[in-house]
Image (cartoon, rainbow, N blue to C red; front, side):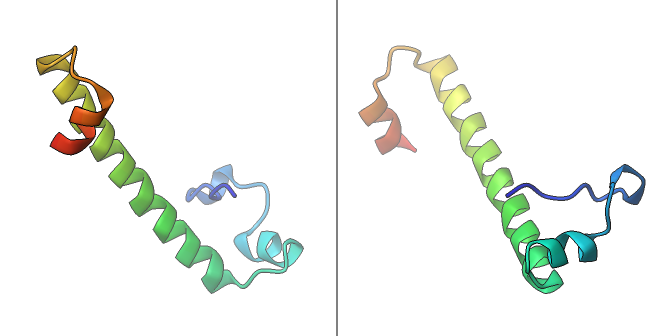
Length: 69
């Protein structure tokens, strides 16, 4: 499931209309949106750590990389 754009001008439909179409409650959507944003931030942090590790140790294997993270 994708997140509806925050900017109201970029939306084609309101959040309420979209939730009604999928038989969801608005609070469930907003809880999902919050989890989605937090999950994306964590993923970006991990990607940055991996890139930094790969810059310093480019030939390090996946197992050692996972252990070092």
